[in-house]
Length: 432
Ligand SMILES: *[C@@H]1O[C@H](CO)[C@@H](O)[C@H](O)[C@H]1NC(C)=O
Ligand SMILES: *[C@@H]1O[C@H](CO)[C@@H](O)[C@H](O)[C@H]1NC(C)=O
Ligand SMILES: *[C@@H]1O[C@H](CO)[C@@H](O)[C@H](O)[C@H]1NC(C)=O
Ligand SMILES: *[C@@H]1O[C@H](CO)[C@@H](O)[C@H](O)[C@H]1NC(C)=O
Image (tube, rainbow, N blue to C red; front, side):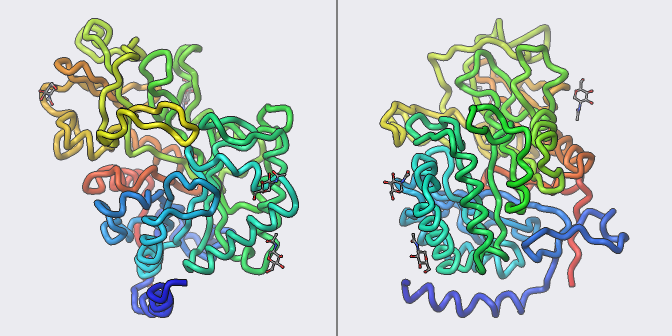
């Protein structure tokens, strides 16, 4: 252990006791004498208000710039580890400060393991009894080294290929469950907050189909966060909503999944609604669309065709991304992702987060998400704004979900999205 880290650990409890303790509650829970609580975390908040923090953005967005008082949990993610649990140097440097900031604000600090580019060896890490125990040991060592409150398992995806060169095994989901059970059964594992970032359909069984019953996962995980985004993007046949709230109102061909379909699928497979956080996108995907396809009368057309050969450069792209290869060695290119803040910086939206003058805007009533279009650059972006976040906030309450998880905390601008969500969900701080 680095000597500097030791001194930070000694300081951490002082920060906790000095801070005023606040929890976040929707008003309906406050008058009621029974508190939902959170299963294993010992957290007094009745709502999960969480986000992921990409550790590699710490240079521009240090932990101190997070709106900590508006969250109950924050999950730091690490970029492209070549092997599971091998932290890159930026993340290792940022973690102590991240955990210190979280704890001084009464927020749970979690570390996410995996991700889109970090799931190559998940399957192997849980594939044998020996490897599961080694993975449990390594997880607990990180928890103890960095004083974490929990761990988020972001395996994309058990039993299914993600990136392109991940190890995949028909027993992935069963092995994952055995690993989680072993971790939970340890003395240190009992009190950890264990979460998983999951797709819009339940984990697949050995036959490659979504399982009918995932209740055993709910017994060992505190909660899952459904990644209801990237539903449409540069791989899709037409422009479509990045993060649809609903799709059952869309034409059959355009029903690619949504918050509505995902919550239904997971709860039908016996994952309790109150252990589900809805993943929300503080970003959007861009498409190059010719004006004759883009406009329908005076409005931005829904599901228009686009030019796949020209991917607009987004605000999450750096110049080197033009020639980037992924960890499989495949050409990756630019993502075309604009953060919500990036849409403001690049002139699509004004400072208040609404469409700028000269920009075409439409709000799709089915997906309940907006689209903007610049006729000069011919760039269309599907994204989320304050209105679509509010719609998702109402849905979270109506369905009795645990709360939300935003990808990612750096994407918002002046808490425009977060404010809208808190207001829609009726979240207020209660301080002791
Ligand atoms: C166990 O992990 C090692 C690497 O640590 C790997 O080489 C091996 O293939 C794994 N076992 C299984 C059954 O996947
Ligand atoms: C896991 O940790 C335990 C306790 O320290 C140790 O006895 C065991 O050998 C470790 N197992 C593996 C596979 O790392
Ligand atoms: C989703 O669409 C269906 C079909 O139009 C509708 O019945 C349902 O109320 C919608 N749900 C939400 C949450 O918008
Ligand atoms: C639309 O795109 C053009 C060309 O890139 C740019 O000059 C213009 O400022 C954009 N319009 C707005 C309102 O941002």
